[in-house]
Amino acid sequence: MPTFTADQLAQQTRGDVRGNGSAEVSALATLEHAGPGDLTFIGDPAYADRWAHCHATAALVSRAIADDATLAPRDGQALIVVDNADLAMAAVLEDFAVPDPRPGVGVHSTAVVHETATLGRDVAIGPHCVVGPNVTIGDRCALHAGCHVYDHAVLGDDCVLWPGVVVRERCTLGKRCVLHSHVVIGTDGFGYRPDTNADGQPTIRKVPHLGHVELGNDCELGACACVDKGKFTPTMLGHGCKLDNHVQIGHNCRLGNMVIISGCTAIAGSCTVGDGVMIGGQAAIADHLTIGAGAQLAGGIQLMNDVPPGERWAGSPGKPMSIVAREKVAIAKLPEVMRQVKKMMKQ
Image 1: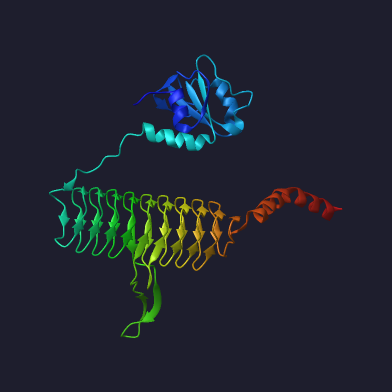
Image 2: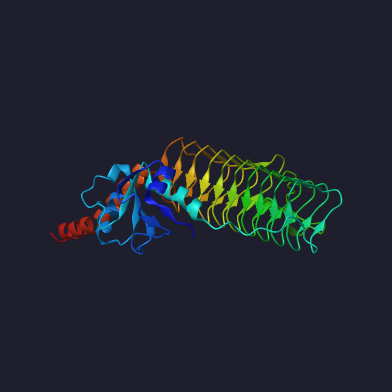
């Protein structure tokens, strides 16, 4: 691991040092587990008092809480005061990070690449990958073991596909997209209709989906995320979208730029999600809804109505956070209300 002084970290994070600027750190740790030689961070005033019992050599501290009386360097320690400790720690993590493994440049001997596929410069295709007809793979893309890219799909420059990723026919990825293990882009939309067969017996007819999926630049999808292709027009994710593990995006959905969705969330078909929307884990969103730009949906929400821009919603069924908060207060008072009702009934 590399070693940095507090002064060097302050320069990298545009911070100010309080205490020993020559203090050296070579590892990162939480407040509870940090020891000599470690760097930690404090971004919330609720954790400030824990610094007194922490043995870390240095800490990144948000400027808003830096003057807390409990936050003072001791015995050669250093505090690095920054605008936002969480963001500063993210930047420092990049300095300490070990480079991800990557297949060697070229096509592995066990991979199958169709003769009509176009590969850019310095492309790396790992073991047992399959690249179909008329696929275009941009410069410096890396396909880890077992990836399958189907006919006429397009990958922009610098994309990374981890093991088991499937990109279906005609789907397109922008530049610098990262698809983690077993992501599937372009699965069939979930469309079925009751019908009868030639013998007049009840059956369920599958509705064909002729569209595809388009991802913007800098999208990152967690393991086992799925994005269904559109029925007629494409399902679209804007630039910078981040999807957690096991997220499902239904057919013909349109996500704006920099949408963040936590794990195990399912968005039904034909929803429109505005720029900068944040959705908590295990959310369930009904079809044909519109979620306005900048809205925030709490984890576990079951959404059945449109959400105006910038609002915060929660609950089941989903509603504005202010209403949910009042309802929770009322529910907490129910036992006392019932006690009083029973007393009145006896009287």
